[in-house]
Length: 410
Image (cartoon, rainbow, N blue to C red; front, side):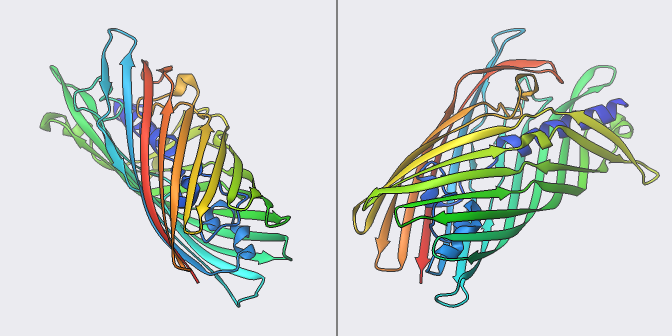
């Protein structure tokens, strides 16, 4: 592999670390976000299309809702060698949005259908232009959009099933510095830009024992993302342009499947307790396959070993309704990082995360609802070596989330 391909491979590897791990958005609906992002065993509203599509059939109202979040993340880096260098990532704001709708064919029909449009991955981040890791990552922007038509069927008042195909669109840009070996070494730049898409599915089953207790399980399949329209662009001195030609690339990878099990329990009127466990098969992303287009229209291949491990998250939430028109919510969750110590890239200092959430809801009349949610998330110190670039350090991160949503039931 020549130096040009090595630079491209290193840059794209770091970029896909960002895409796959750093910015999986867990906030997909406002009520659930205020309760630690639970929802698998909750017979709720149109947002169940994401958490457990079978729940739509056990609901009796049609429902439309929209909302969005603002997420601010802070990351600190402390180098271990050759000196005590430290820096902070420039704060970047993420604004994932969602929209859901669910309908019954007739008022008492056992069939229900819906549509979910949400943001499973989204990110923008920016490091200082002269920071020590600029040859790994400088800045990036990632956007995804998932569209999910949903169908559910109720066997009786207790059991329902649901199924939904998922179509996911994705785009990203990524920039970093590169070192150009002229008579004297100078810095240049490389930027990736790509668009792609993939298909997956979401299935679920729900059991409602009574108005007090329900439980459910859902399975979101792995999504095979294919990026066939990528372009690598270089910013280098004129004398080096022949050695760093702009050219297209293609790649594909699998986003993990997620198996979720959850339950809700109402110990008394006005109080609901919900819990979820999610198991994510990150081991499907064990390697990264990259292909660069050659002058004869063929592709040169390269494989990078990633060696991710499966991970899980646990979630718990409580909703209290002290007044008929007001709901209060609290919750929390823990997520195990899928990235092993020797594979932690400074592109994303992934670590085990704890998050604490709170939320509230306001009922306006019989049909209109307004919900808000907030979260504080944090990690402990993580000491890691990114052995591909021999880049070691201690990472620590925290994040803040706020959001607002509107629901209309009819």
